[in-house]
Length: 240
Image (cartoon, helix red, strand yellow):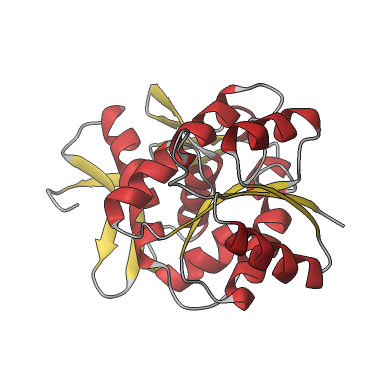
């Protein structure tokens, strides 16, 4: 049975989320005050946190950053549940260390699926990190112990989800990986494709890879209307 904490200044939303997840077998608490909510996290760390963005005195982005910067709370999976659904809002959320992003209004079944998938996928550690071997393919080396990618002789730190995405692309190298396959293999659930979420993480991953490689040598190709393909030795291209 998983312990879940909800932090949202809308008590009606807290009650709805709490009821939905308790019916799915989880134990839930909530706080409508982000400062008190953060104190609850430090007192008794939950297995998963559901976090609103717009909460007045302390916004969800700032709170997510504090959680990620604290050694005792940095591995708590976070789902951001918010009415802010624009791409720039998602970018800011993922930059703050959020693992998944669900916009209001939401379907209870989708919330339950995302919570279960994140709990299963993380096991408080990304799935790929359960394997200790270093994976090398072409110019690219994945180092599980440090969440890192090495391109030739330079290294960059990745988030767990970026690591997972690159791992899946490496397993299917030189093949197109549809967005729905990434959603299933990285996030662990089936359903409608969350194109924005996948696109944001791919953009961040590309940026990190570009910084440690020849920026004209692209390793992740977008197959428009389909998905993504990894070219382990890179290709000379201006495509994003």
